[in-house]
Image (spheres, rainbow, N blue to C red):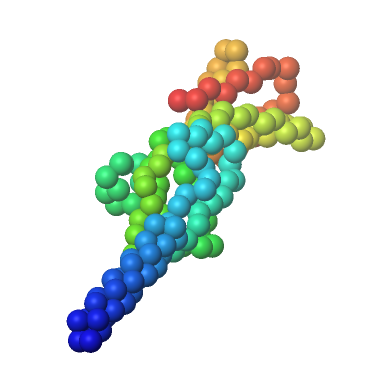
Amino acid sequence: MKEKIKKQTKIFLLAEAVFVLAILSYVLFFNSPKQIYPISGMSIYEDNFVLEISNGETVLISSEKNFVNPIVLVEGDDITLNPGLYYWKVRGTLLESEVMNFTIESRVGLDIKEKKVSYEIVNSGNVPIKVNTKNDSLGILNESESIVVEKNNLSYEGRQI
């Protein structure tokens, strides 16, 4: 009789261990942090995009694959990234996601706004540009900067520097 109880106890303990392992596997693997958007290797051209994740608490972004001095984001944070290659991962309570990457592409934009007696030339891109006319350099404009010039019949050109 004692041997039968010992055998039943062993079976019960084994079943309990399998149940605990199944729960741990579910918690650790099926609820692990994941990146949804952008997908790995993606090029991003728009100014405003949202990092989409699941099962995570923080997002780490770095220009270096080994995450030296990463940018740490929590829900609601807002940042502006310069053009370039970035690595990112999601950190949960116990685990981190795999490392993925995305590229912010350079975008050159030059807007000319007509005023009464002048033009306002605006860098509408995400990189510094050198603004020229056919015969003259007007200078360098960083992102969102502008210069005002007299109205004339000149053509304007903006080139990434």
